[in-house]
Length: 173
Image (cartoon, rainbow, N blue to C red):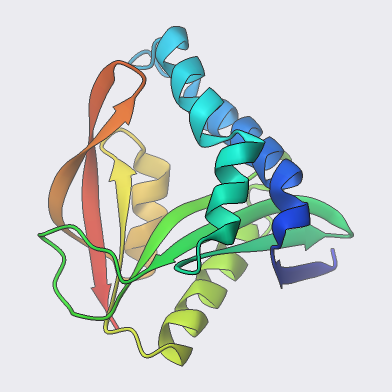
């Protein structure tokens, strides 16, 4: 498999929305804690082309797309200089999303995106990277632990009308 990572631009908003919608649905729609109405409310907003386009115009937000043999397979969304109160460090980089479509899980997409995320953190002289991960997303928690992230707190993730608990994980760079 030929894997390429590239910076997303405004013309990529539609494909990013599609990948986000599909991967979020694949990962969370079957979980008994997630009501279909709440999933729809969240996904309609978070993965609309308009929302993604607004992100792409934001100078503090960066998306990288992973393409496997020319096919969009996943992406990472990161945001500079934002943090939760439990996150230490002054120059932070948030890992907002790291998504891969199911058919690409286990093929190194997530690892490649994570390594590029760390490279950008180092190049931009970040002292801390952090993320929020759902308390029931055990697969993702294990993935992040392998990269040295540790829990430093919790915050609310609003899924439609359902306030859910995300663990806040951080790593010093």
